[in-house]
Length: 382
Ligand code: SF4
Figure: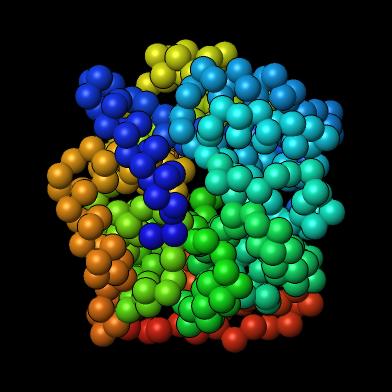
């Protein structure tokens, strides 16, 4: 696993402590969004469509610290927007390091080299670099040529300066597993600590609604992506979550496990949906109708969701809070999280409207891109 032992120990003792105290709902990762502004406009992003007066605003360091102190999750992920556009991001990070929180500062890395001097390497700080696949896929996903190479250069500089660096990759239904496998090799050769992968989620606000993965297609994609995954690929996430993505372990969403705090307050119910805000984390816990969320709830907005912010906290909780989960994690660490290479993927039914975007895919310049559709996997419903 691409997670340092000290971080694993902190999370394990935290989860065990919560379980021993009989707490049913507790946070594992705080998603702290100090701003929504970004220097990219990715078509799959649900965060940058706010009006200009909202996009101009920042959370103050004091607001960030108050949220972190109240919630008290051991890990703080700082997405956005682009956190490096926040004028006091170094102050926020320093305050969280002083609180011994493990921080993932999620960045597209366009400004990382310029701002690296504002941070100190620490076991508590990891730059989580947004890399949406190989050069062509990444530049297409972020809608700007050259961003992949800028990010590669920034990763090298950050590693050379002694920082922890991970990557995070969102996969959409246009992803070709055979092109992503060399990409994972390239990231590991760079020397990153680990990689995070997650399927995309269809944000209501995102301009591109065609390319988000449906649950059946997600499982098939991740089965093919991780089949025979070599040990050299280190993933900075729970083995149970990786098994879940392949349909090899069942998890239910625990949306309170990765609560989101931003300019509007504590977002209900999760990082992906905006169905109101609470003033405090306690109010979020007490006033959200949790039974209305997660796959078992029958909520259509949750039906196809398998994203890390909903299911990773469940995986962490099962790993450190149950013998069954711990045992399965140990076997996955010893023998790998991917299925056998010869494994036959589960048949996946894909509706025509899901298939057409794959067949009509174009590169950033508008040229057609070869689509690989493995026909035994695809059944078109009419
Ligand atoms: S299943 Fe997904 S969309 Fe639904 S509550 Fe969980 S994280 Fe949010």
